[in-house]
Amino acid sequence: MVQKSDDNKARAVGRRKTASARVRITPGKGKITINDREFTNFFTTKLLQDRAMASLTAVGKEKDMDVSVKVAGGGVRGQADAVCHGIARALVEWNEELKPILKAGRFMTRDSRAKERKKPGLHKARRAHQWRKR
Image (cartoon, rainbow, N blue to C red; front, side):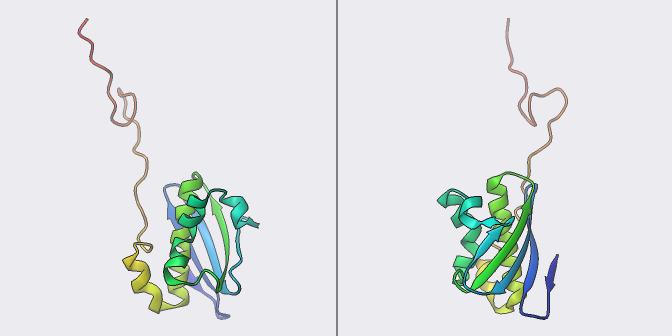
């Protein structure tokens, strides 16, 4: 779901596994808030921060856009990827010329991999009981 409002804002939804991020971007000074918290307080490790900011960094807009995100579900890595996907989709809605850069960096594609369900008679989704001769 992508929406563009009339006052130079863009909104989009990014998803990964069970995490879902609603992203709103506006031109500004590079302030990022996630769930009404500071960006560095929400994603505490550098790896997660880089993962969430990857789409902004790819187009060179990390200092030019204010980003507000509401994210729910999943774990912190899934949430970071959902934020990255949502930012990429919002950037394309804001400026269509950024789409080739983001598509080449694979930020526009939703990663559809998810946990496979457990099957009856097995330990996990595919792990069977260990065979024992005696």
